Amino acid sequence: MKPKQWLDDFITGFQFLTRIEICKHHDSSLESFGRSVKFFPLIGAMLGLLLAAFLWGARQYFGGLGPQNTLVAALIIGEVVLTGALHWDGFMDTFDGVFSGRDRERMLEIMKDSRVGAFGAMALALALLARFTILTDLEPQLLPGVVILMPVAGRLAVVMTITFFPYARPSGLGHVFPSHRETGNLYVALLFAAAMFAFLGLKAAIAGSSAVGCGLLFAAYVSGKLGGVTGDVYGAVNIVTELAAAALFLFLFS
Image (tube, rainbow, N blue to C red; front, side, top):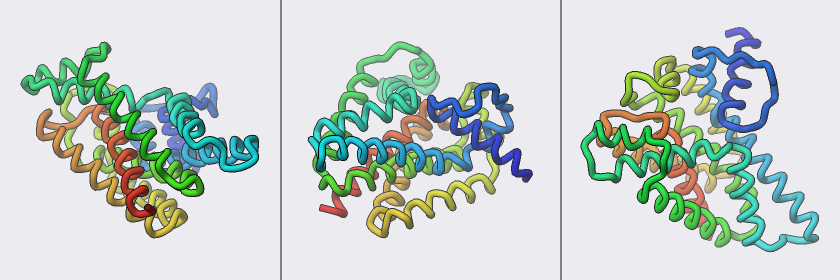
């Protein structure tokens, strides 16, 4: 693969997963979207490093560790701003559909509806509350590590879901990823994630790897309900994995 193609794929993935425009006139082909998944954990690491840098800067401003509750709230808001709440939207849609108690076709219809239902709103509130509570319960010096770990584990779980689970719809934005899936992309994604896990230490690696397993179990459950996964499910898998990573990180370091 040519270096230019790798660069194009990275830019495609970065501008899809974030709201940061690094190349204004970048033209992303469907093939580039499909190949960009190999960079998802790397892009997750970059997001985590940006949030960790913000945390460091805020602590410099406060002249110490700073107010934990305020900083955690700012980190959550910062993540939403950087990603445009991409995964949170899919998380809400997935819970609206899958937990509606309807048949498969009706579940998929509900997930396509742009309106947020009761299950989606409840899931969002509980997930945000859980994230805030877990992060504020951490020792302040551990916060930068988990802020980096969560998006790496979440994006790796998404890549593995794309690779191992069928797509539930014949078309859709998320369909571009499985339609261009390659085992080599998964290997590269695993390499990036493993490097970050090793950088963060053994306990973080255990938490991250176990969290990815939790995300895949969730994907398997949803796939059983829908006969496959969708773009919304990818977002939900990311959020579930991030929450699991934070919870396991807290458990291992407490």
